[in-house]
Amino acid sequence: MHHPPESASNVPGLPDISERLYNQDLAPTKGEGRRWSSYSIFTLWANDVHSLGNYGFAIGLFALGLGAWQILMALGVGAVLLFGLLSFSGFMGYKTGVPFPVMSRISFGIHGAQIPALIRGGVAIAWFGIQTYLASLVLRVLLIALAPGLDNLDHNSILGLSTLGWLTFLALWLVQVIIVRYGMDMIRKYEAFAGPIILFTMVALAIWMFAKAGGSIALSKPDALTGGEMWREIFAGGALWVSIYATFVLNFCDFTRSAKSRKAIVKGNFWGIPINMLLFGLIVVVITGAQFKINGVIISSPADIVQAIPNTFLLVLAALALLVLTIAVNLMANFVAPIYALTNLLPKKLNFRRASLVSAVIGLIILPWNLYNSPAVIFYFLGGLGALLGPLFGVIMADYWLLRKAKINVPELYTEARTGAYFYTKGINSRAIIAFIPAALISLLIAYIPALHTVSPFAWFFGAGIGAVVYFAVADRSRTFDDVSGEPIAIPSMH
Image 1: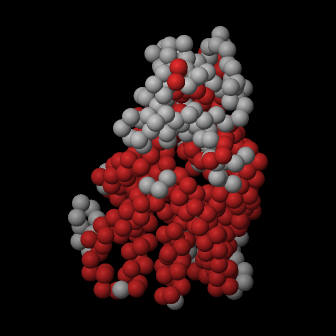
Image 2: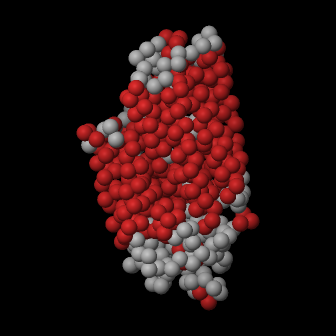
């Protein structure tokens, strides 16, 4: 077991490192140990962008009345914004080498950082369970296609799930636990393995649907939107596309802390976000337009097409690809964040491996299929937590880029000394809380009040903007910010 330094005298030039703030998994990454290349970051997006949830969102734009070019424009607007946001967020991780909960200490204080870390972790842990459940539905289809007799196990209910449902859920749950217990490098390897499979499968599905539709597609519904209403939906779609990634723009540093260079981040983001999202949009337009031309039906997900594949062998291959995809998305989007949040909460007791098991167990005992089947829970609870992500992002980014101009004293992120740069008052920066609260309230009101539904797609931007502006206005400028992290710093581990 690794122990933090006992005192500053043990590590010359560094402050006292507190075991309440430090363990090896929270420590800054060492430059020579960074293995995430531009390809690693590209495959991260190759998996996440093509998630079934994202396809459901983009197909919903077609259902709303947007045609082919309008959908591509909406996704393009979102992609350009995300490329910028995720690059700036990623640079923070590369420079400091710290995970998101530690990054949050810069603006919220060494103890106040628990607020953004637990909000981000809470959103993720619920979605980890829900996404595992959705993947288990695909696995059930696959197993019944291979062994029709298993359908007999799919009609009872134990705590809201059938026997086959429990077997498939627990199997996928266990696979993810095993992968994550080998650490971030195993996640990197899995993403690199899954990325090409997903891209090939989705492109093949689009080509098959195009051929099935006779070599042409419906570019829009007969009652497609026009004029001002059309443009509103285009920009609303772009804004919501950014909101979908509100979690990632917060904790992208969890991944880029292991990036080899800033160039790797920019290159990986470029191919993974605007270019990959263009491909994603083309696939959406083709499969949705083809299905609509064939029978006038708007699908809800590529899984609908997979279930209709007449060849059992091809159905099995496609279903396996969707399972590989869903696990890849879940690992990076919904498993890593709560692991670091829990590790940050109890660094003396929890490391990456132990926290991964705690996260997974919580994701199981909340019975996520019941959450998913309750629209009120999804809308009010998870939607409410999601609405808080914009204000958090605004405060953190304003503090790092505008106030400190990226000058961070990394070792002092791990000290409880009262003179520490991030101690503030009892470890909490009250000014960050003061900025967060009104931004969060306004974001929630925009998201929930029916009379404001026309601006609700832009709730994340309002929250982030208000949080940033208020924080910049009230922040304490009397502090000096010495940049001691021009290159990634690793605090030596003491054994």
